[in-house]
Image (cartoon, rainbow, N blue to C red):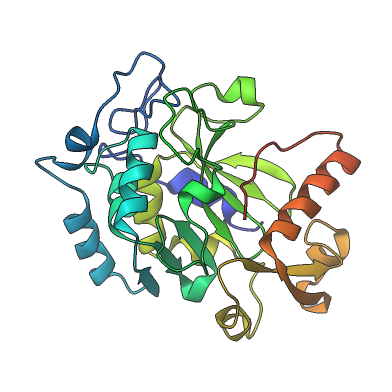
Length: 276
């Protein structure tokens, strides 16, 4: 993907919700840090400096089209408890206070706790247990967003090497459907989100957007994406994207096609890409 390497290198790691080597501070999810003490709803929600008000200011000041979906408060509280991440982080703020973010008309879907079944929630996408389970672990990392191409953004787990993935614990990765591999983006969740709101997606997807893409994406629901033929990873698509055919398919089909292509071409399973 043209421009992606430069964009990844340009992502700034920030302190709030950012990552460091080892267990990331406010993202010290129980699933990733076995030595973290379990916290109850009060400890996770009733914090002195919640991230959501600041994030709303950032959302209101961006020129990037972002739709904030209505959330399900009950589902949000349950997800926060399962993740063991507090409302101090942007991840916790999003999960607790909204149903998800649709960026660029739905090109990118950032998961939270939706009240409308049209967009899957973070809990569904990551196959979280229906009741709190302190032994639950995400498989390799937490899926935080999908795009219409079948690309997957994941917050790295505690041992990326064991999961066969690059990057550091708490770092955002991208599964690129045009390259059929995981790419480390060099930043944590909050820095990644700020980069999106500053317009970073335009260069990130350079070469993968075509004339009229907004109108095609605008009619999709949150569980649909676009399948290309020849596929995005093919020499034909790389040479001339405008010559490919596109059709609307479930995102689940896109993820399955990517997994099959990885296995057939490289013999490598990309691992968990989310449930939609």
